[in-house]
Length: 436
Ligand SMILES: Nc1ncnc2c1ncn2[C@@H]1O[C@H](COP(=O)(O)OP(=O)(O)O)[C@@H](O)[C@H]1O
Ligand SMILES: [Mg+2]
Image (tube, rainbow, N blue to C red; front, side, top):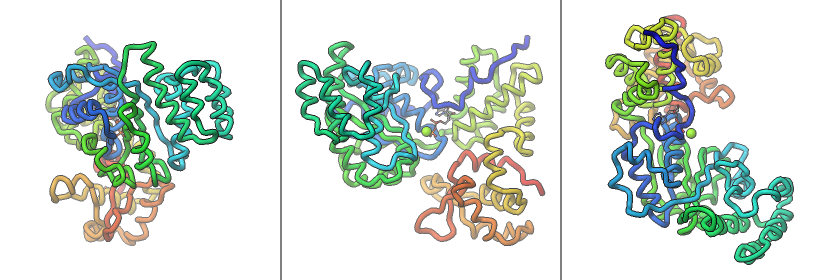
């Protein structure tokens, strides 16, 4: 009997907070447990776009909060110390409007988000809050407020040490009040964990490393997450962090085939076994997504949609074939297609060039191959064979920021680029240019 199914029950393109949806990554989870249980040190989570960094960071937040569901499910219980360190946690998503270190700390000190913001943990949030964010601009007033808050007891002493107009000191005061104050009310926790997602988009990262180092202590731990192939891509003055990072450097690679396949088993569970996928179909989808869970979730969703249309709850290779055909003509994934159209700008030649670049094979060692570099020179002769002329004139649009950018120049190389979004690259491989 057929039941109409909402694809969102089993698949999502959102960051994954729910440990029951989170697949694989046992090695990274165990690294995270170790990092959380050391009293000093910074956690850095980096990797390519769409690979699952934010989802992992959310899982780390849950672990820090003392939710070990993920550990139990992954069979990693034995890695937990007898009394794991637990944290009050802050999760902040950076954006490109943040100019630098001061700006970032100001934002943190003003974040009123009820689930993830720093202020929710700072004493006497309530009434003073609206006033607080209003006065924060001329930050002189801000510290006076703080002074007023500490009405009695220990905090008062701490707050009176605030230096008016000094946001860094204000942050220190906030941070140092969090653990003591909240431990009076809640179950005792050891420290404060501040997770900063999309750290890579902060414009001027100079000095951020040493600032984070100076703000870290056994009571305050930072975790930063963002796009980068290595630590230096994420934090420019990473040298100054030195030993802080020894344990907590977490590189998120594309998923293994098994992990990608597991996404579909988990989806079946989430669908309460109503929707099933043939083994062959799961295998093929896992090949198509090249280890990017975002693409797996997307294809999974559209398979379930298609199955609904056909009145079945079993997704097999025939349904996948329909989706693949839709991809060929650009009808399957509107948002990826929009990026595609913007990139090629109605030029068939550019579409061909893009396809050739996306298809370039990489026979180097695994680490290099993960860089996903493509070389202009490599595609030149095939481009000529296909009648694509003036390759060098087609390229600029693909590099320009306002059209994506689709390609990013790899520094210190000649004619070498990287697809800014590997999921998009995988999509281009499945999207046939008009002339073919
Ligand atoms: N461990 C995982 N298991 C299943 N799906 C995942 C996992 N990690 C990420 N995803 C999916 O992949 C997509 C991208 O994840 P996200 O965490 O936002 O990546 P990033 O922050 O690296 O861009 C989302 O659709 C998310 O649902
Ligand atoms: Mg992210």
